[in-house]
Length: 154
Image 1 (tube, rainbow, N blue to C red):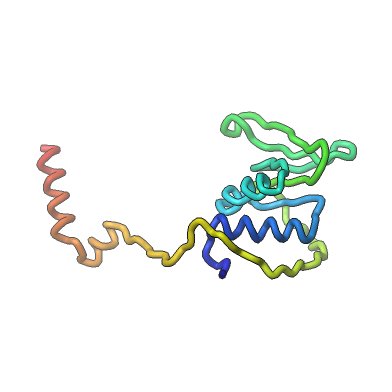
Image 2 (image 1 turned 180 degrees about the horizontal axis):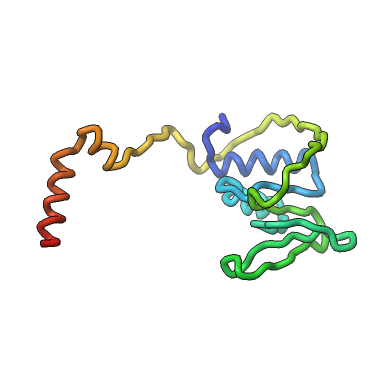
């Protein structure tokens, strides 16, 4: 199974395997479309808590504290974990880039992916009506729709 095409089940299985293999104390993921889909699944499968959409991270004593927006960003809420693994998603473009990158160790994993509920067979890009019209495709249909619209407005 190749992971170049996103499927929630496959990504969830691989992330769970990686977390179980490496046993990290802290798991941080970007709050992207893919992670908004997979992070809750991983947290549920591993029995972890999840703080999502954090816009800042700080320390209060020995505790890591995450700040996240609530009420459409009109207020902010501070959240932390009392015990266990720390698992959070961080909103992109809210954290400064480190001038001196931290050295990390790359983990190797031979993923075992099985029992997928859905498999992407083919991705088809759907063109817009405007693009088709500009290329001369569906010209009659476009003109008919435009004429009907004009007739209704008159």
